[in-house]
Amino acid sequence: MADTNQAAAQLGVPPLAASQYSAVLPQGGFTDVTECGADGWAAEQTLDVQASHTIAPAAKIRYYAGKTCKGTGLYDAFNQAVTDNAVDVISNSYGNADGESSLPQAARDQFNSMALQAAIQGQTITVSTGDAGNNSGPVGHPTASFPSSSPWVVAVGGTSVGLDQNNQPKVLTGWENSGNTQSGATWAPQRDADGPFASGAGGGTSALYDAPDWQAGVVPDGKRAVPDIAALADSYTGMLVGQTIRGQFGIGSYGGTSLASPLIAGLVVDAQQARSGNARAGLLTPVLYGLRESGAIADVTPQKAGVWTPMMHAFGGVAVPGGQGSYLIDFDARPQNLQSGPGWDNVTGLGTPTDGFISALSQ
Image (tube, rainbow, N blue to C red; front, side):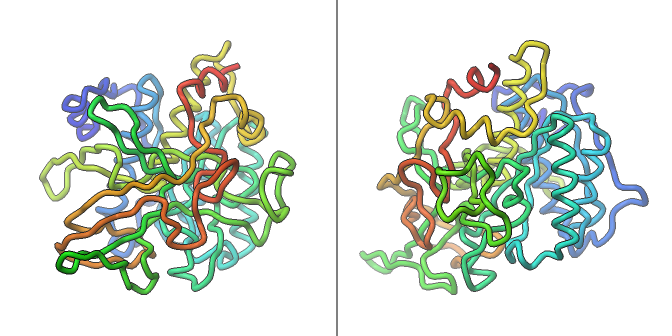
C-alpha cells in the first residue's frame, strides 16, 4: 500500500485507503521463494494493485497469494478466491507459455470447474494472454496458453498506445513488436532465436476447446480463439507504476498483458458500481461479443508507428539483445503470425474499450 499511495500522490491518483485493501496469504507461508523470484512476483502484485486502483479508485482490492509459482500454486489461490466468493471480479496475470497441452488435464479441469463455479456465482474472471506472442519461441510452434484459452474466462490481449502533446491517443494498434538494431546509419531486423519478435500479446486458436456459442461466426476454425478483448500492454507505451526495489522507490513504465488484465477488471468493476443494485456481471464474454458493433469497443488495426529505445525490454520466453544500444521498435509489424486487423483478431480480440464501454456494460 505504501508504494501505491506514494505513486498515487506523485501521479495524481486518489489514495488507496486501508479499508480498500486486504490480502489472503497461503496457510503455512510461501515456498520456492528463490526459484519463483520474489522481486518479480512483488512487481506483479504491485502492477495489479495499481492498475486496478487507477481504473477503479473506489473499488476494494483483495490480493490472493499463491503459495508457490510452481505446479498448481496459483490455481490454488484462484480456487480460494472462488470458494470465498467475496470478490466480484478476479484478475489473473499468469499463464503457461509452454502451451495449453503441456499442462496435465487434471490441472486444466480443476481450473475450468472452478471458473464455471465462479460464473454461476456471478463472478467475472479476466486472464492475461501472455507476452510471448504465439509462444513459438519457447514451444517451437504456435500455441495458445492456458488459462486464457478456457471458455469460462475473458482472455485479455494487448495494445500499443501513443499519445500526442495534449495526452490524446495518436497511435492505437496491436501489441506485437518487431525489433531493429542500428548498425552505423542503417537498421537491421533482430536476428535472435525468435527472429525479429521483440514482445507481444498472446493469441491464437485453442487445440483443446471448441468455440463457445458467443464466438460462433466471429472467430475462425470453430475453436476457442483468444483474446476476447484488449487493453494497454506495451511496456514501451505502458503505465507508470511506483514500487520499492531493494529499498529504493522509483516510478517507471510497466506493461505486459499482466497490465491489461487488471485494467479490464477495473472497468468491469466501474460498470458494476454504475449498475442499479451493483449487480455482478458474471460470465462476461457473451456480453462483450454482443457489444462488438455498439461503439463500446473500438476495432484495432495496424498503424505504421514505433519507438526508439536504448535498451530492449525483457519478457519471459522472448529473446532480445541485452545491454545498451540503439534499437527501433516497430508496432504491430507481424513478427510472427499475429497482427491486429478489422473485426476480431488474434492480438486484440474484438478490440479495446472506448469511453462508452462502462455505460454499455452497466445496462
